[in-house]
Structures are given as C-alpha cells and as structure tokens.
Image 1 (cartoon, rainbow, N blue to C red):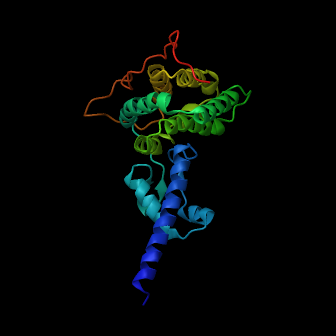
Image 2: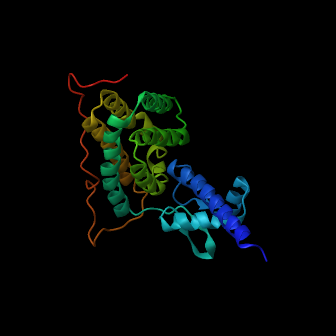
Image 3: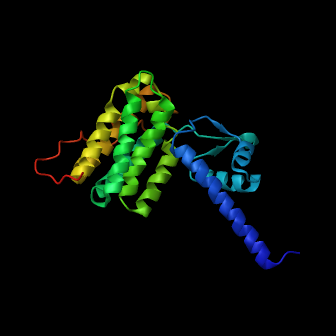
Length: 261
C-alpha cells in the first residue's frame, strides 16, 4: 500500500491536471473556438494535452455543472444550444456586469493596459477591413479585446464572474461575427470598440459603459434575428425581442474630459 503522503501527492497532481484541462477548455469556449452543437472528443483532448482521461472527465464535469457543456446519452459531450429566452436574460446580465467592468477600467487602466487594448482594437479593425475577413480570427480578436478591458478593471472577482458568463456565450457569438461576412463589414462592432477605447483614454466611465452595452446589444439583436437559437419562453410568456437590455448609444466625450495617451 502507498503511504498517505504519496496518496495526497497523487490527488494534488490529479487536481492540478484537471485545472489545466479546465483552463484549456474554458479558453476554447470563451474565445468562440467551439460553436453550439460541436461535439467534444475527450480522447482528443487528453491526447492534445498529454494527460489521462481522468482529469479530462473532471474538467468536463465542472464545465457541465456550469452550463458550458452538455453530456448527452451514450456519454457524448457537446456544446449546448442556448434558448432564446436564456440568451436574452444573459445579455441583460452582461450589459450590467461588463458595463461595470468597462467603467472601472477607466480608473484602473495604466499605460500598459491602454496600449494592449489599443493593439487589440487595431487588430479587430484590420480584420474587419479585409476583402474576405477571417471570421474565426474576428471572433477570437473580439474576445481578446473585451478581456483586455475587463482585466484593466483590476478586479479578480468581477473578472471571474465575466468569465463564467463567457463560458456560455462565447460559442453563441459565432452566430454573430461568423454568421455572415457582411455582418463584420457593417462596422457596428468597430464603432463601439473605437468609442470604448476613446472613453478609456479620456477616463470617462459612462461613455465606456455605454460603448460596451452598445456592442453587446448589437450582437444580441443580430443573433436573435438570425433564428438560430432554440425556441423557448420565459415564465410562460414569450420574451419580447427588445428585452435585451437598456443600452444607449455611446455619447461623445464631453469637452474638457480627462484624456490619457
């Protein structure tokens, strides 16, 4: 029999591996590298990460409990398709939570943060201007830009909440930027991103909040209009299409507002 110390060390190692697998799968979901309906091969995940099946199953169980994955009959694992009423609800929550993070970033962002956010904004804008935009890159670039802003809020607790939300909406956002090449060329996301960056540089939390809200709302309205979400009702009654949050258009930065390079 092994010693208790060896057993504890083995348990800790298994937990560490499960955390690594969880982080890898979570990053994949949040970045939109998996779409609703995609099936997940546990064996492929284990082989790619060089681990056994045990930590992969532990990570999948955790993501399933968080609503990011779904285990079907015969133990098939897939990315679930969200109902329309669920999506409207999570959109309203995102507008409040992510708007708060953007507002906090106006005070928490330093020069390095602003440089990173500006670089992410340029990357997304460059992709949108390509004759044939790489839509998968656009989805990933959008996520990287948003999270550069949220990290600049300097609130680990708030960032953890946002990550939990994106575990579920990351795959759904494929229906937005990857839904149609014309969607990204419309420029709605680019305009919101530019307004957000300007607000962060000016230290204007209300404009930053409105820019994030406008970006989230625009994507949500497009996704809902596409008809690709599962049908559903909320509280026994259909949820009206406009019930996706009360975001307003970003306003201009007032004259004399503080501006940071």
